[in-house]
Each structure stands twice: as C-alpha cells, then as structure tokens.
Image 1 (cartoon, rainbow, N blue to C red):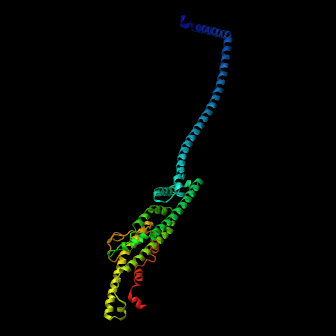
Image 2: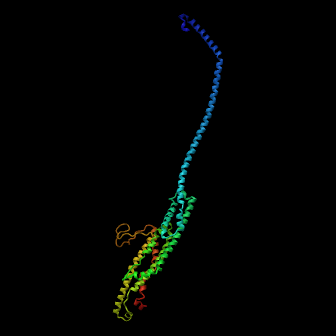
Image 3: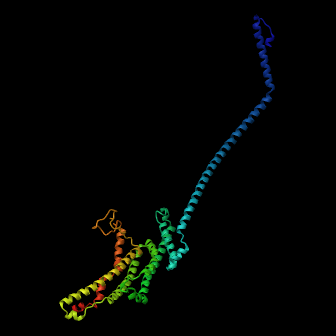
Length: 401
C-alpha cells in the first residue's frame, strides 16, 4: 500500500512510476475480472430485458385498466343520472297520482246523489237528501271551473265529459224540481179553494165574529211553502232563469186564492153592512131628509171601506214580503227610520228608506219583483171590490141608473 512505503523527497519520481505500474496492473485485473463475469452480465441484461417487457406489459395493462375504469366511471355516472331521473319521475308520478286521485274525486258522481237528482221524490221527508244533492252538485260544478280547477285540466277530455254530464244532471234536476213546484203551488191553492169547510168556516164565522172582521189565516199555506225555501235557493244557484216561471206559477196560484178571499170577504162585508134608507125616501123625501140619508149611507160605506182596507192591506203586504223572500229576490233592505242610506240622519222629505242599489243585478231583481207583485195582485183592487159588491144594495145607484 502507498502508506506502507517510506520514501524521501527525492524519490518522488520513483514513486510516481510505481503508481503508474500499479494502476496498470489494477486495470488489467479489472478487465480480466470483467471478462470472467460475461455470463453474469448477460444474465443481468436478460433480466433487464425481461423487466423491460414486464414494464411494457404492465403499461399496456394499466392503459387497458384505465380505459375500463374510465368507461366504468362513465357508466356509473350514467347510472346515477338515470337513477336521479327515475327518482324524479317517481316523485312526479306520485304527485301526479295524488292530483289525479283528487281529480277523480271531483269527477266521481256518488250514486245516491245521481239517483236523487235524476229520479228522487220531492216530498218533505226527502228534502234533506235533495238539499244535500243540490249542494254537492253546486260544489261539483264550481270545482270544475277556473280558478278552482287548474287551467291545464280544463282541456282534458275526461273533464269536459264530466262537465257535460254534470250540466245534464243540473238540467234534469232543475226541470224536475220546477215541474214539481209548479204543480205543488197549484195543488196547494186548489185544495184550499175546493175545501168547502175552509170557506164555510171562514165566512162568516171566522171573518165576522161578534161584529169583528178577521184577517184570512195563511199560516198553514206559508208553512207548506217554506218547506221548499231552501230548494228554491239552490235552484237559483244552479239556474237563475228557472225562477221566472216558478214565480209566475206561484203568483198566479196565490192570486186566484186572494181574489176568491177578497170576493167572499166583500160579500160578507156587504151582508153585514146595513143601509137604513127606504126607496120612497129617495124618490119623494125632502132635501133635508136626503142629506141625512146620504150622510148615513156614506158613513156606512166608509166604515165598510175602512174595514176592507184594515183587513186586506196588511194581508197583501205580508204576502208581498213573503214573496220577495221566498222567491229569492235580491232586493235592497230597508233603512231604519230617521237614518239615510249612507248612515246619516234623514230629513222628512228624503226617500222612503230604501237603500241605494249599486249593482245591476239588484236593479234587475227589483224590476222582476215588481212584475211578480203585479201578477200576485192582479185584479185585487180593494176599492173596486167594495163598490162593486155594495153597488147592488145602494139605493141611489138604482135611482141614478
């Protein structure tokens, strides 16, 4: 080794030569060793080549796996997207089914209501069922109208068909109910007019008792009419136009009864009125006697006229008021005395207390009410009845004629 040699300073060249020789020997030894390990090198190279092939194969496999994984990720994303869509469709389908169930409930016509509307009876015992059927039909018709029904449903064929079916049910029920009420009003009045006991007891015993005249009692008649007040109200909501012929029929029937009662009342009043003037007094009496006779007869006629007005005017007012409410007229209410239509105090020269009407419907209804009152009171002129009935026993009329 180098450190095993002890050399002086002058021996540097010799030392350098020695190092060169030893370096050459070492290189020769290394080359010889390398030549002896050639087989090992070949094995290493083969191993490296095999490793290179493995790495290439691994790279191909990784590329293949990467493609497959990318496709799997795409498939998973597609599946997730489809699942999300399916979940959304499921939620929408459930909501749609719920809406359709609600729509079907609206479109379904209960059998008991259909039977009642198309063929049910209108007697008093069945009125509750009829009213319930009317309420259901009114609600069903309104439920199929916008905005109660979504406008998107309005174009559905099923909805249009059901609307047509409900309209047919409404028309059938209104026609049946109107026909029944017309007959009912006529039969109710006819039964009273054909009842001999009614008029035999009414005249004169009920009208003229101990010199006192009494108002005809229509309590039973009005009670039997009130049974169908709710039905009329529902008929108005179903078809307002059906009330006009019903009002006409009611007024016509009641007018016949009122005219009969007025005529019978006037006959009884004539029989109870005494005119104490002899024919000779009219033909031969003195002027002073004529004046006394005229005064007596005028007083008797005035009393008869006052009795007629006292009895029949309140009756006609009551019947007119009942007509307005029973036949569902939308007329303005009366303002309390002393209060104006706007809530302020009213003077003596103001209107009669009828509130102002702002809607055309109320004005039309008031006009219809006036027409119905004319039908109700047609031919009932109290003054005419008085004078026509008293005309047969008034002595001066026979002289004048």
